[in-house]
Image 1 (cartoon, helix red, strand yellow):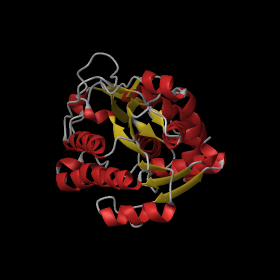
Image 2 (cartoon, rainbow, N blue to C red):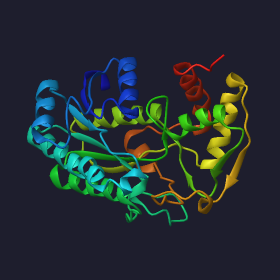
Image 3 (cartoon, helix red, strand yellow):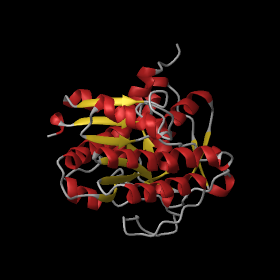
Length: 300
């Protein structure tokens, strides 16, 4: 079904956007990816022109301000991209009668729940980034009923900036690492997330009735420390580097923005609706690390 659907992706040059381009080529899906220079999601005319040119069956909004800590010092930039941008894309999709898949985040929650969050749980963002993304969700819901909001968490892959790539780099540069062990979540590979977006988008283009908010994240949980240990081990055979990774509490690694202690997302609703779940991060780490190292070969 996806092969007959035309996708337009805003934020097409980010880590998910680039993964979506790969997935679309593998599947023979028609996908147009536009970056900020091609289409500014804060400007209705720019978004409208991109939709007119691409003539999509479904729009994906992966454009976002994702610098969680810097957002505390740059709230206007975060809110412009994450709230105004979301509202603009949704409004233009409504005007063109094109379904929208909008990406959101676990940061809409405060992390106080003892178990995984589902879609019915109350939101309570801790910082500017989470608040701006939560406001973006509200804007999408208000502007256009033909939407699918996909919340995800701890995204990693070969493109862009993410925790896995940072750990691969630090494993080369440092003799030891310190990583927090009291924050838990579901590491989510961009490969799986791209598959979910294409699957959900195909459903949206078919004019079905599965509109609403869904969680989609990796099928196995971990702490940042557990994830880091696995990443370091995965790169060791290629680099010969295996620095020890010490587990530390969050209080020993202060950041400008507070992080949720619990970022676990329950993906059962998405799996039930679309028949697709994400792989365990343990099965994805090795291949992703290898891809990252192939993109940036180990120095001799």
